[in-house]
Amino acid sequence: MTEKKEGIGPAEAGKAGVGSARFRWVDRGLIALMVLPLVCCLVLKVLFKPESQGVDISGAMIYLTIPGFPLQDLVITESQINSWGIMISLLGLCLYLTHGLTERAETKRQLAAEWIVEKCENLVTVNMGERFAGYEYLIAAIMGLSAFSSLSCLIGLFAPTGDVNITAGWAVLVFVLYTYTKLQGGVLNYLKGFTEPIPVFTPMNFISEFSLPISMAFRHYGNVMSGAVISVLIGTALRSLSKMLLGGIPVIGNIPLLQIGLPAILSLYFDVFSGLMQAFIFAMLTMMNVAGAFPQEAWEKRQAKKAIRRQRADMARAEA
Image (tube, rainbow, N blue to C red; front, side):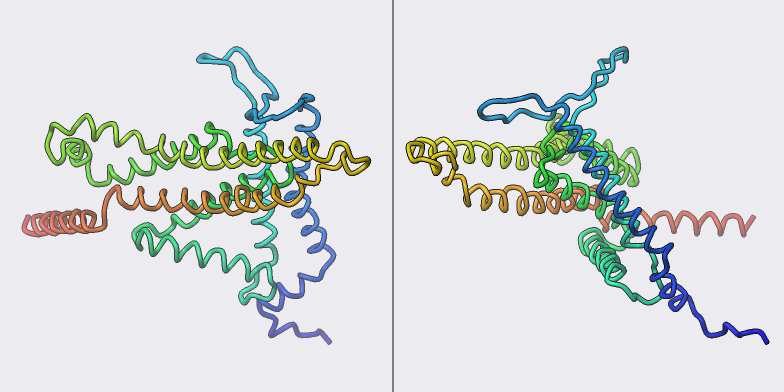
């Protein structure tokens, strides 16, 4: 007699596979994919970081310089390596959250993944409209990469958002999307926008147009880097003050007591709150600029004109 296997749906099959040995091994591999890139970034920093004395507020370290490129030598910096490490870790996190998906959410990780997708979809719909459905993946990627880049300083890494070259690259991508959306209204309308409200404003409109990526890049970089510099300066000042006031006391004088507490509170603000806030602000600016490049009203008018032209063309072909 053969045993019937009827009644086993996708949810039951997925749930049955969750507890299997293969499933657990894949989970371990995905966790390793999240952790190992960051560990490698920390090892590189330890190996390349020179011994320093006093306050160190220098930028990203240069790991490698490759000569022979047309414009300038190719420089591989700490911020670039950390960015790639964070992106690989985020890839591992996404694969981990979506591993073992079922038709009906059965695990906490699937609930978390569905919550993230739902919130990003709502955020894009509210701020950009239904016309930009599909941009939630871009916005989620921007917020995730920016937030984790800023938070990476909590484990001792140089935050890639503290390098203007990284934030400038993101801003250029946003500017490309902004220009692409604006060109959907037609090249003539795009060029005409530089002459509004009167032609005398053309130079100012031109500067304003191309200052968008510059302002986005320096706003994000400036807030993150300034917080890091302030935290380092205050922590160093408290250590020196503790040594000056308590240095004469045996044993206790060797412990920077005044450095305990306040730097941690500052880190909660500058590294955690400010980092997450800047990620949200950068994503909001992206949505506002892209959606505002070709407003909904202008888009609807253009679609209506296209529909009328298509209707007239169809009538002309029918009459012919």
